[in-house]
Amino acid sequence: GCFDRWQRQMDSSGPRPGWSVRAVFEWAEQGVERGTPLHVPAARCLAAVAGPEDRPEIVEAARSGTEGARCTALRYLADSNDPDVLDLIDGAVATGSTPVVEAAVATYERMRSLAAVDRARGWVHRPDALGAAAGRVLACRGAAQDRDLVLAALREAVRGEGPDAPTLWTLVDGTGRLGIACAAPVLRHIYRETASSHLRGRAARALAATDPSFAAGFAIECLWDCEETTREIAARHAETGDNRVVERLRRLAADPAEEDEVQTAVRSRFGPDAPAV
Image (tube, rainbow, N blue to C red; front, side, top):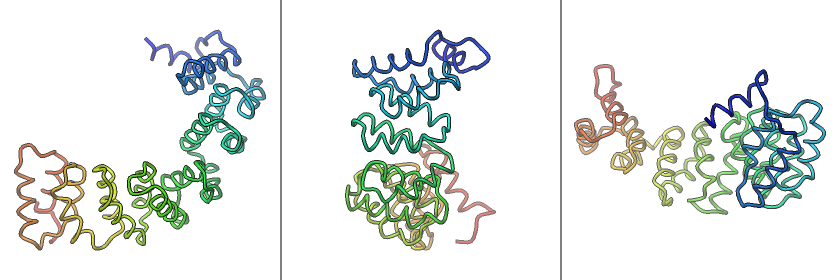
């Protein structure tokens, strides 16, 4: 029922709720007062009730509104690809309360426009939450020209927050996506030091794309990892010159409890079309 109602609200040709823009902002503010952030659903409601004539009010709310209204307006403007939203996000981070800053940063990271990526190249040097978000944006959506910026963000995160920093998940993935070969030493450090098996697996995937020594090194160790996705990466890359590796691959292929993806990866190494090893 809730999903059906939401679909009707989002359909511009269908019925709309009888709320005004101001009523949506008031509802979002009520959520703040109750300690229950509502700016995300409020932004969806705003998309259903707002028209072009409401833009000035929404922009003003994003610039200087109450906490709930400001978060809602930023989210709505970002989803609408408003040309002023990046400047408004910058202003919110500079002048907003902690919840407004967090909402502004989260809103920025959701943006997919070329303008957002271009702005990230300027923001990535900032020593604040928006600078960290800019590094993650470049990791996810940057191009080859952004390799040095992503590598710098990765190194800074490890130095400043350690090998278990949440921001590393995205940065490590981006390092592998962009094929940043000189990031291999940092990725090896993360692999060795992190307490997170999931981050270790992401580091292994990035190493497979950046480190020529991965197949003869960490890939073999990963064959015994607790995460099936990490074992799958290892099964695709581990060198088979060592009899222990061959035996482990055979055990993985024959284990009825092993994940299908791991077994498929192993069999691709030994099938009739497999490359020579």
